[in-house]
Image (cartoon, rainbow, N blue to C red; front, side):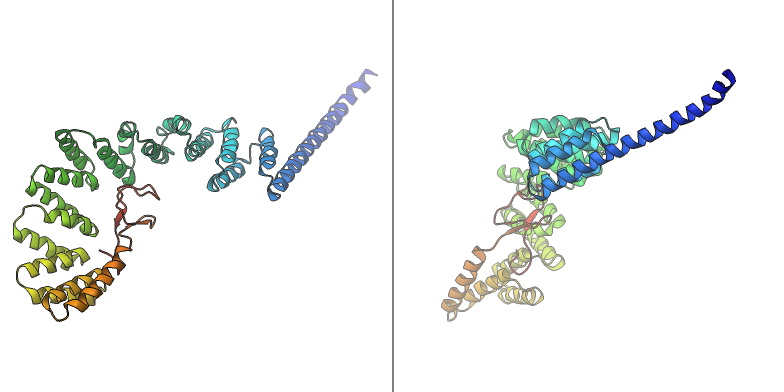
Amino acid sequence: MLELLFLLLPVAAAYGWFMGRNSVKHQELKDRAHITKNLSSGLNFLLTDQEDKAIEQLLHLLDIEAATIDTYLALANLFRRRGDWDKAIRIHEKLHQLKLPKVQAQQIQFELAKDYQSAGLYDRAEKLLVPLIRQATLQERALKNLVALYISTHEWAKAQQLAEAVEQTNSSSLRLALANIGCEALQHSLPAERAKAYQQLASQYPKAIRPRYELATLAMSQQQSAEAFALFRGIVIEKPQWSADILPLAKNCSMPDEDWYQLLSQLSHKHNNISAHIELADWLLQHGSIKAAEQLLLEKLQQQPNIRLFKALLEQRKQGSEVAADILESVTELVANYLDKKVLYSCRNCGFKTRQHYWLCPSCQQWETVEPISGIDGR
């Protein structure tokens, strides 16, 4: 009898294993059916524009199935792009509570910080972003968002404290931002302090225009014309497209006449700049070369049709002919009225157009991208 019982033990064990396996499979099938039902219900709520109910239904699944994180991230990002920040925040906050791998958890933390920032909850966003600037995979993106946050709140000192972290990246836009933030922070400082600080910023961020521009205008206000002209000259040689704004300032500096002529010639002939053409024609006119000035404008108009060049030619012809002065006056006035309605600046990054210059583009929030426009109405 005992031998029979001993023989039956393996059979009993095998039966127990078989039944247990079937039970596990049955439970897995039951769980999957439950998940599918909740997913279907959530999607149905989305399709019928019942988004709040849909989010509640889908968030319940996070406690059951964490493998669908990417789906939830995509859904939250969709809400954020639509401006539904509260819905994006609810999803990301729920994801942030889960125990996930470090890289995935940090990505969710970054996305939640972006939600808070978009919703204007800057203190919450800052709290999440600060730890991320020490993470190599997210450092540059976290720094860009954190700098943008401090720009929004005008916390220039906090932004400047990120300089060391920025130097660890290859981001030229972050360096430009810090150069301009440094200039913003100096607006209410004493002239002597500003001059030294502008020089340091210009040396630390050589690709930034703002520190040199501010230093040049400060030099002008202190009657340091030679220094101011040298700085303005350096800017327009590097950025000829800025001539429309820089040349009128440089013209007010006391400088040798030959230096002014050489600068205008270089910008006109080498860089084909509209403002330089007009200034050079004016210089020729003042030095008695009336025909040379007119010939210059005609040649440049043939090479590069432009309304402002045409207006300059009309004004010159008006001075040279008393008979045609009245007719040309009315045409010049019409052209001037046309130009008065045209935008003067455009952002090279996003295309934002304006009649006013901004160091920080109001549209894309990039520094030093708003420049005088080019083309037929350009300067």
